Image (cartoon, rainbow, N blue to C red; front, side):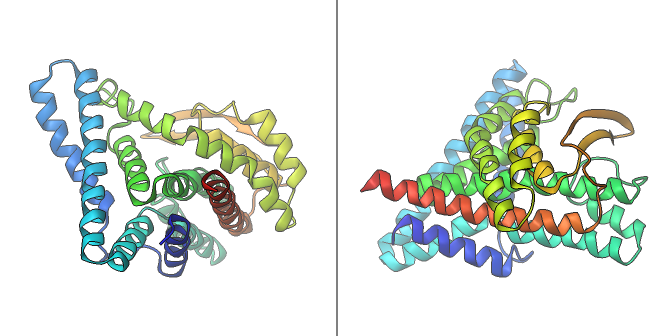
Length: 315
């Protein structure tokens, strides 16, 4: 089966059933591997930055080889089995349905007036302190999380799936998992996690920019502010401390006509971030639903562009 068809099938499965908790998820295995290799290489390589680099490369290499072996063995049984296994692997690397589910749970709590539940729910999808957030800040945190994870959890995996099938998407998920495991700027991981963080920045560089320039067409389809999305993207995308997160956040802020960024707290410490977008109107709970629609529309447009490009290149 053509890789394009495999990816489309995987996207449909993800948007139908999401990520059931009982389903064995490869990312959990990658995370466990990363932690085990961290201990091994820290004890054998004295330089923490070198140990972190070797750990990151080993995790990515093992993931690539493991995925290649699984797909190869399944194809050896029967080509159709190989296709099914490939589709399942690609499906496990996508998170659109879960992103919609978790963010909508925040909206539902806000809509029912349960601020404590809204704070708890938003704390499940972002890393900032949430226990004192008011309604506007809960909405901002949720919109920012969906805008950033649109790339990390949906369009970047699609990019690598279309590029390299199940092996490509698992290679990206290995890099992403390394960043979420080691990419912290604290005493333990400042040097050891350096390579993981830089690999993640590099892997998401093209997908984040492709995604962001496709937000305005999605906004046009959904009758949001397409022109403003372009304007804010061009003006504010480089303001964010992350080289990639600011791309999609700026495009979404412009499409909604709201302002994102500002002061957040992490571990009780203030963390001011540049403001993205203009406050043409105040943030409201329904902006969570609008952001989800923008994310889904952008994801489908991204998939069509990627498959179209693949067909053009391979013709």
